[in-house]
Length: 163
Image 1 (spheres, rainbow, N blue to C red):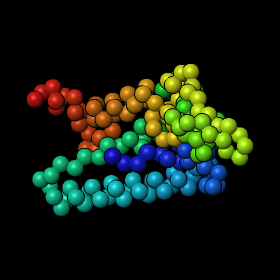
Image 2: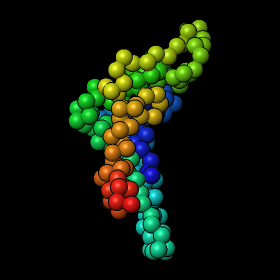
Image 3: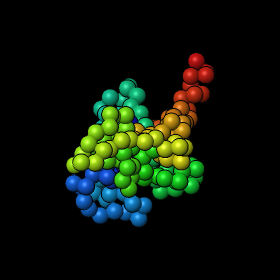
Image 4: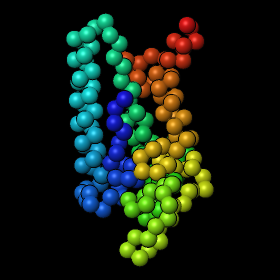
C-alpha cells in the first residue's frame, strides 16, 4: 500500500510548525510532493522486485489516489468537510495537536481543551488526524476488493468467490 495524501490530512494541516504553500484544494504542497516522491520510489521498487523475482506476486494497493480524489472532489462522495476532522479539539481543521480525539480533557496555556465528535461522520473523510471515517473506509475497501486501485488490477472478490 502506498502512502495517502498526508498534506491534505487535518493532522498535518493543523500543525503550525509546518508552514508552506498550499494547492488549490487547501493541501500543503511540500507534503504532497514528499508523498508523491515516496510513492514513485515504492512503485519503482515493486517493478524491480517483479523483474528480479518473477514467480512472486507483487501487488500495490493505491490508497493515495482514492483519498486524493475525495479531497479534490468531495461532492462525489457526499463530503462537505474534506479537510476537517470529525473528532477533534477545535481549530480550523478540528485537530489541535495538544489534544486529540479520545484523550482526557486538559488545560493548555490556561484554556481547557476537550474533544468533540461531529454529528454526521459521513460528511467528513477523516475521523481524527489521518484515519478515515467508517463511511469513507468503505470507498477504500471497495477500491481494494474490486481491484480498481490494485496494480496489477484484478478483482479480489471474484478470485475468492471462484475458489
